[in-house]
Image 1 (cartoon, helix red, strand yellow):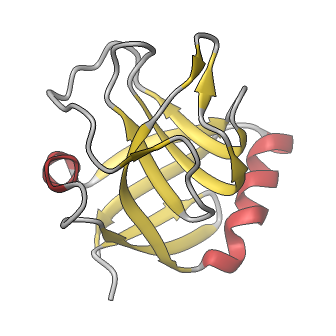
Image 2 (cartoon, rainbow, N blue to C red):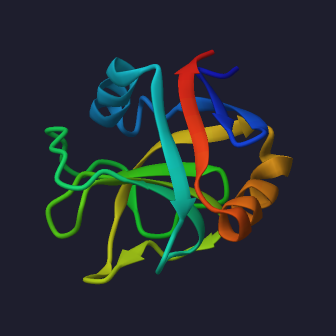
Image 3 (cartoon, one colour):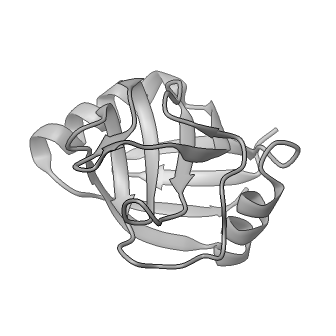
Length: 137
């Protein structure tokens, strides 16, 4: 069962909140829905797309954080050492920035449409920024 519908470029995904593992991050992100932005390809992290959020302070710390999200994991770096950002892994990722390795809160997992993750990543890499919308399922 999906909590969130994600439309990214021409693809649609279903995702579930990781409420038991990242309750504060899930609650904060749920309060922002529907959320519209653009994703771009990561610079240092490998096979992922991200949403840079600059100095945005969401009032979050670390919970259920990882530097190695699996394909379909969506993580949120709460800021501090580097800018606040959301990352969607579509392949092998070692989450990093120009300051070095980072960790982000794994708060969403894609459950439907995983077969299109690599295609979304390659589209973003070769064609540039893609619109992304997160909304309640």
